[in-house]
Structures are given as C-alpha cells and as structure tokens.
Image (cartoon, rainbow, N blue to C red; front, side, top):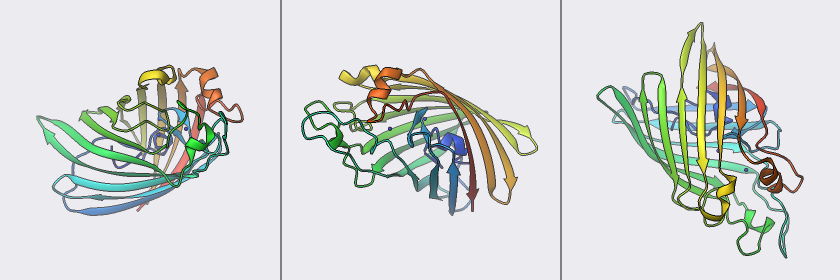
Length: 265
C-alpha cells in the first residue's frame, strides 16, 4: 500500500515518505506558488511501505493565498498496487504505478493556535487494484477521499483525517480514520527533529489491519532550497496480515530507516 498541507512542510522528505500530507501553517503574506522535487530511499506513508523497499521519485506544487486558502498536488512512484496479492477466480496482476494527491483547504489562527482544515484525494492513476482480488469482499478501487483537520500549538501538531470513501482499496472501509501527533524541534544550524506517532483505524471486516506507527526524523536544511532527512520508522501492524496483501509475501509494515533529499523552489 505514514500515505496538511504543504504535503502528503514536505520539507520533511522522510515524513513525505511516511506521509504525503504535512502540518498546519499560517498563510503567506502574499499569494505564492512553490514547487518541490525529491527522491527517497523508500516511500513510506503512515508507516506502511508503498514501494516494496525500493527508492521513490516524488514531486509537487503548492499554491497558497494570503487569505488562508491553498491548493496543491503531489505525486510519487509506487509499487504496492502491482504487488497486490492475487486471490479469487479471475485474479490478475493489478496496475497503478503512480500516486497523485490533490488537496485543498483553509488555514487560520485563533487564540494562538494555527488551524488547518481541508480535503485530500489520493488518485492512484489508472489503477486496477480490484483485479488482484475480484471475489466478493476482496479489494476495491484504491482511490481514496479524506477530509482532515489539524491544530498546531507551539512545536506540536495534532491532525485527524477521516475517509469519506473506501480507504486504500479495503472493501467496506468508509469512515476509517487516522490520528497523527507530531512535533518539530529546531536544533539550530539548519537541523530539526520531528517525532511522530499515529494511529490508523480501518472500519468493519478489515479492522484487523489497523495499527499504530512511530517515526523519528532528523532534517537538515542544506541551503538554496535543498534539504535532506533520515527517519527511523516502526509500526505495530500484523506481519502475517500485511504479508498476505503482497503477491510476493513482502512485509510493507516492517521497521525501517528512510533517507531522502529534496529541492524546493
């Protein structure tokens, strides 16, 4: 399969690789458009591997208005859809090599707290995830819609996301949610430290796939728009269940370290 915004504050590339979406921030003084491109040793989203442990190419653009409204898009190469376990009569290799996230929302401040509310669409371009498990109760189209709200006070951000569609190809999973608590600590000399804890719940028959994930990311601002990161990631996901999602028995939830580099302009 850690898949607000300035996506998946994407200055934290490894948290891109743990998350495509970012954290609540205040609006810019004037409208602006920014771009970013990067590579990660592995794409992790909410702690779960999206590329079978292989590198990912990622990039996006963001528009932020002075009135607090923003829009953006972000994309990454992925492998989890093609790796979907083949089950049921008529099963065949699924397709879907690219994740495209399209999002928009509104940021504002009140009583010293920064808020961010919005909508995020995970579009798995031309995906056929259903083909890997076509039997009743199997996979459904991987495309996912979520709404989210985040609040930032000091260095800490608490974010809640809820699926308003099926979640990442799980059947009958509308209403699944993700709770994310993160903080950003400036260490000086261009370094920052980002601890993170999250909890993914999945509705109904697939509830056993729910899990918690944890990450500790060290970022370095290299100047001129370039940044680097390294993240240690751990999950509590059931190894047997997650290996069962893969046609090759790959455990996308295993502990790992992700490194990345990004250029923003």
